[in-house]
Length: 371
Ligand SMILES: *Cc1c(COP(=O)(O)O)cnc(C)c1O
Image (cartoon, protein in one colour):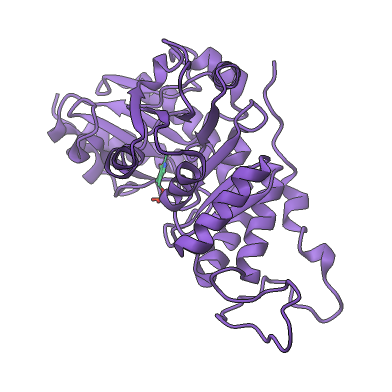
């Protein structure tokens, strides 16, 4: 079994602290400056706020520790995803993306890569490797996919993509580096939205890219600096603060999700449940092999859109909102955004509420649905 071990969250909390001198602030200072004092010739230090910022660098330092690879921070998950694609793709390239992954990645590829002469193909995550990867310059995978929670085998995919001469990019948003380590499984690049569990309080957008490939790292850095889409220092500070409690929150959220998934699957009002941690889930065997945790997202299907809305809106411990990974449990009916799912399909993001209090509220809302 090659389940990767989670990095040491305790050492992460002291990464910066162990470099301090007497009198330095223990909390991360916020460097809110576009200009740096630069007398005489430039000697390679911070030059201008679009290229350098000490607050991002600390955020990147912590993320790099978690990923065990160099990291660049971006102002959103999509900014990191676009950096990864534009760093790796050339005119005339063929790329493969999931048909059931985060929909904005598809829209970005179809709207902007296609017009640069890039051929964009799509496949469902559950059968991602079927058909092989010959002829693909870049393969972009997402596992578990958002919102359907299908998995693809990252080790097998990376081997085949590399044998065919391609590059594998993995969107690891749904798992975070504590739950799954795609670089260890062979991916060339990891991208993620830190707007979700890493930020954790639904108050900041942020993203990052991690890679051990120096050429891709350099291109992604230049894409940020020349393209101009940089993280704001205040947002980087908030994301860094969120990371300090990620391990605590993620552990609680995954533990709660494991219990809730079992109980939801046994509830008479719930049609079907997808959660990689359920022994009966079609992806369970693969999940045990490649994920360190089973995550905090559960999908459940109720009889109709009306039942799904009544369930969500009738539960005082569920925020009806898009996005996920916050301390507040949230849920939404994904068909409202045109995802290819049943009308009563609900994506549930388990937060940090005490498990029995949360289950009581969820069960009461389900019990109240008309049969
Ligand atoms: C939310 C999300 C993104 C986009 O992240 P933003 O921070 O909203 O730009 C990308 N991929 C996945 C899987 C997501 O859930």
